[in-house]
Length: 197
Image 1 (cartoon, one colour):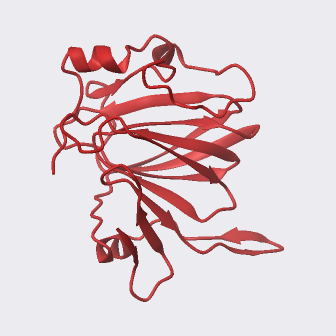
Image 2: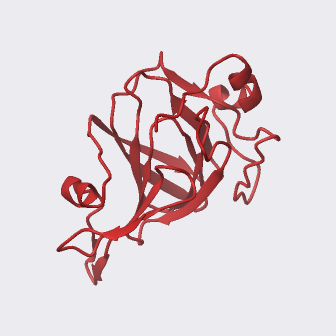
């Protein structure tokens, strides 16, 4: 689906994964810096995207940090809207929803502080990113609160998934991500969300 909210210049485009949208908005820059909008509920509703805001977070990381691949098993699900507010990074989304017509597909979206780009990540897909600048900050809007008991992940370097991380050196992982199970192990143990059409 491609659309522009009426009365605005927001462009909303659905990517290859069902429910994954790219939002592009104008960036107003001058000698002082820049200004842009990156979330408006009414504009998303105008093109058929519903998002309920429950929590906002920031993640600041240095170059070659890989965070992911994380997803939620919460009953209410957890959709995200993300944008890069400093530096540059590659945002990575993998469809891990059992029964999804796009199961297993990978999308990689380059984000940086000067671009008017945000990504709407549907509930149930795995999300991560790699920092491609010296330092970068990713801003998240979440549709449900973070709950460690329903948070899950698979190993970001899982060779069977084969994500093409944009690295200029060895990847830097958290202990949790470095010890994560493979996607196949998560699927075999019933630890993947289901696609809700």
